[in-house]
Image (cartoon, rainbow over all chains, first blue to last red; front, side, top):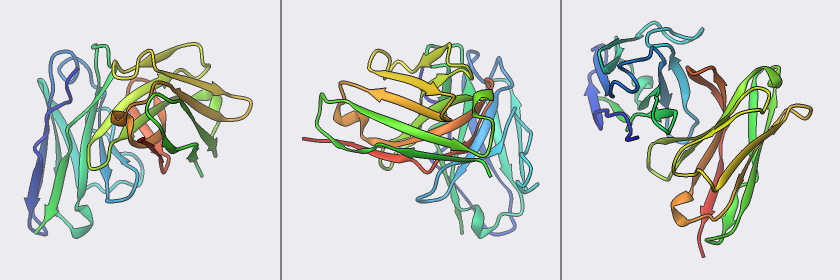
Amino acid sequence: QSALTQPASVSGSPGQSITISCTGTNNDIGSFNYVSWYQQHPGTAPKLIIFDVSNRPSGVSDRFSASKSGNTASLTISGLQSEDEADYYCNSYTTSNTLFVFGTGTKVTVL
Amino acid sequence: QVQLVESGGGVVQPGRSLRLSCAASGFTFSDYAMHWVRQAPGKGLEWLTFITYDGTNQYYADSVKGRFTISRDNSKNTLFVEMTSLTPEDTALYYCVRGMGLSWFDPWGQGTLVTVSS
């Protein structure tokens, strides 16, 4: 099972909105609503920011939203802030041997 | 609060074994599945293994199947992974993570670093 495909980097100016894509297959994103997203600042552990495609855990800013269409999931960050500068990873359950697969990761830069 | 603290990492020679532990607190450990996820230096996240809440079922990524064994002691709120036949490609920060069904991972421990080098 190959990793889910994400753009290596995405950038935006403060206040702008950006979207990160996460492309999988019919074995994972396309067949299950078990997509989650994680934010990782340098030197720290990943943090859950979206679960089950589009749900935010308590305490996560509503500037983070997400959706899915076909085999691709997307994370949108609205009103971009300097604190959003981090790496972002998607994850999905998969019917492949691996059971769970992460995305390749996207580095978000706030210009 | 919910906390996961990994330990057991270090420098190990290729071909040797190592056992990592993860001490859980702040929640009913025996109610949750648990995972190990690793991150090689400067690289992305890789899911490794998962054990059900009661320890009866374990699942592994192909990259570690047959070499890693996940286990848990619910009486001591502790998760383990026994890693054998280690290679330099196993060098990574190993995270212990609480799981929710087939869905999400939260929270994550701070990780324990394993370096495989001669």
